[in-house]
Length: 140
Image 1 (spheres, helix red, strand yellow):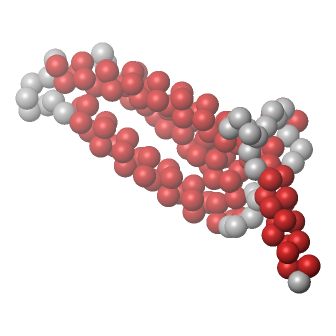
Image 2 (image 1 turned 90 degrees about the vertical axis):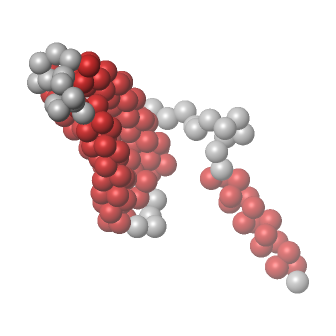
């Protein structure tokens, strides 16, 4: 009976070790020298967050340019902004599905979040470049 009573206490201790810090922030990690899988996962997540912020800034610029193009276009040739919004929504769905699929290389393992975040960061940077090119080529 004693063994059964100790099991929940031991499991609780293990969960506390893996829990986030009490203030809700992730641990301080040096991403230039990440040594553990947890650190690599955190750094991959940060990399994706940075890429996503850059994408959002570029998307806003690109959407503004498409909006300007629509204002100067005839009714027959307007629709650049709507096309961009539709494309971006479809792209986000694609990115997330593609990267979830990519994560199956380590499905259920501690490396899966790193694979997914790395994939998302890579595709997001490529999309940011596509949006930059779209804006540069819009002629506005």
